[in-house]
Amino acid sequence: MSVLAWFASVSLAVWVWLLLGQGFFWRTDQRLPRTGGGGSRARGGPEAWPGVVVVVPARDEAGVLPLSLPSLLAQDYPGRAEVILVDDGSTDGTGRLAVELAARHGGLPLTVVSPGEPGPGWTGKLWALRHGMALARARGPEFLLLTDADIAHEPDSLRRLVAAALDDDRDLVSQMARLRVTGFWERLVVPAFVYFFAQLYPFRRINAARPRATAAAGGCVLLRTETAVAAGVPDAIRTAVIDDVSLARAVRAAGGRIWLGLAERVDSVRPYPGLGELWGMVARSAYAQLRYHPLLLLGTVAGLVLVYLVPPVACLAGLATGDAPAAWAGGAAWAVMAGTYAPMLRYYRQPLWAAPLLPFTAFLYLLMTVDSAVRHHRGRGGAWKGRVYSGRRAEGEFASRPRERQRK
Image: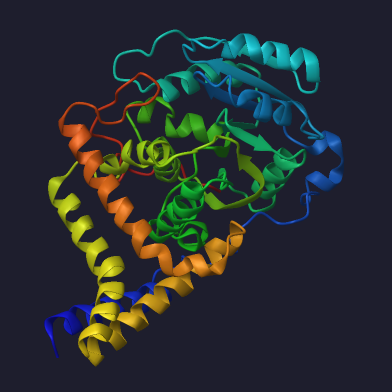
């Protein structure tokens, strides 16, 4: 066998393991129940539904707020609920626009506050969440819904989240909002983004009775208030760039039970019209995901090359040179890769013929990850809306933290 055939065979073996041994990450069936009625507590009537305060951190979000905030105000939640929007130093009139939208659309009560510039050692979003969560806790709700300013919710979204938390006794219920896929680059990059995330954090392993992974999707997180207090969030994760994963780990370390799935009725309305915007989204946190470690970066690059780039190269080169083992192993690995990607494309309502293009998208992600490391070492890592965060505690903060609370 040629060297290329050997590499292709190794890649095929890896793909067989990913197909069968990585928590069936490629399946898209981890979703909230389709019914919106809830369980035993919810069936007792409106008075049985716990109070909820929705906290929305927002910085320069005037462009998307008209599409997202009215959907929160229009929630048909049967219990007591209200919305707190935390204007994180916006310069585009975000706070004023929020007040105008509430006056125009009505619905749930809205409070708009501004905490000022972040304190030392805080990222902007978590500083805003700290202020909003403190105000929310003063209202005494049983749950907090932490949702980004670019996330639009169907009217029954809050009801379904709370019902899922009550029915399965979960402390954190999170949905990965369906991102926008309109333009060419969004269609090419966005489904792969969610696919890679699920490969790294298989949802089934997160949601299992004996969890083997921990993560959340920061755009839509329902959090039990007492669990937030026990976990010390957001103070305990104040420097995190990847705040959703850090939040989930803090909750898990405090003994909380977590659920994460794909959303059907929660959508991101933020546009990424060009490759540059998508590139920035990934590069902002990719190196933080690797804990700012050069060896992890090298290993990631090597892994991406072996797993995603070797199969098509081996298949095409083998066919061109008559190297049958390389062509067969590379083609088989490429086919398994495309097959595991197909469910995510179907979830995003994209044509299945795009599945074989995943190696090209993976190559883009490889370049984005390297660029993320370069930005970090140049002091520009974690840049977001005029702020730069270069902390080194975005991941793994709670790996050795003892469990503080056990669920009964």
